[in-house]
Image 1 (tube, rainbow, N blue to C red):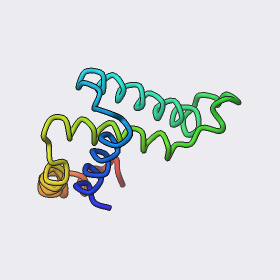
Image 2: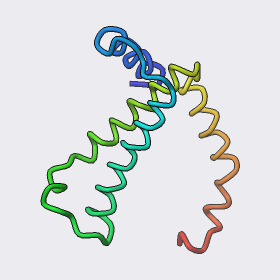
Image 3: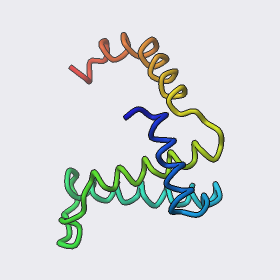
Image 4: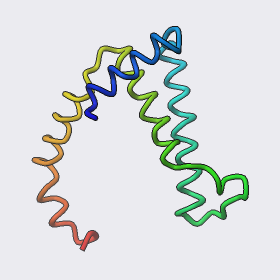
Length: 108
């Protein structure tokens, strides 16, 4: 699956099951909520906070997929071709950060 296809899948799902997109501000709030759920799992499962019994059954993959879904919704709503944007960003980071990371003593 590439990002372009994922955007199309989300758009089809919205049209067939979701009736319409939530507005951009609602989706931004939804994204914040979903990222918070990812942060909670990471902080408790991999960080120093203790994991509550109720959190032990939470699926990190499912929560990350929720984040992706909302990001894809926002891209669709705002006319962003996320595959193109991602490819450009990866190219920029590759050119800009290659030597920087190799020369970073903290990463050795």
